[in-house]
Length: 251
Image (tube, rainbow, N blue to C red):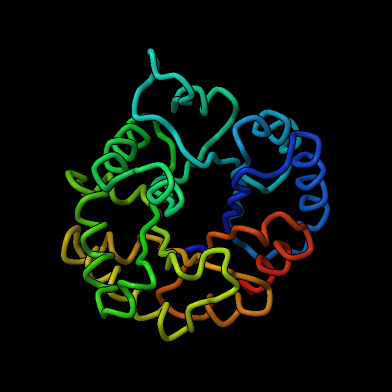
């Protein structure tokens, strides 16, 4: 059985005081949560304040990005060792906003992934198609290409440490959400790709999250699919009541 993972991507929101208050609210609600893994990924400047609030909380800490270098003349970058120093265990890599707005490629995501694994960080690697690619019938082709590039060179042991997140770009922040059938079809294709690449055992172990306008009212149906192992949540993760509702849907 794969344990459900619910991860909140706060994006460029919440100053330290607001992030700490949100975590306090979530922790107060956590007594009723099902047995799932919960991760929050604040903006870099908010990570330390959140980390201070997580002692005794079931919530784990992650970041939204990282450099593939440990240190050096890379102005504006944050390294994996820096993330470890402030208590991060997880890191999101290759989010569509990073790919679309900041020019990240499968090759650069792969480089970051290899670095994260070498440091013991738990990566959540994002993949997904545009509306144009979906309407052209190229969804599986696009996702497979991203997997080929982003996970290039990984061993089975490496792959066992990776979580994937399928996020159809057309559903991120738009209010649109893939139907359970649409999401499930892609998740099943991703698991088949993993089986072919890394073997049945690793494919059976790897968690594949869905992301794209996930909310309490659609989470239960999505999480009920046998190949959907959790959610990468954007806007709804900024409100304790909504994020709590998504976590509760994992029951």
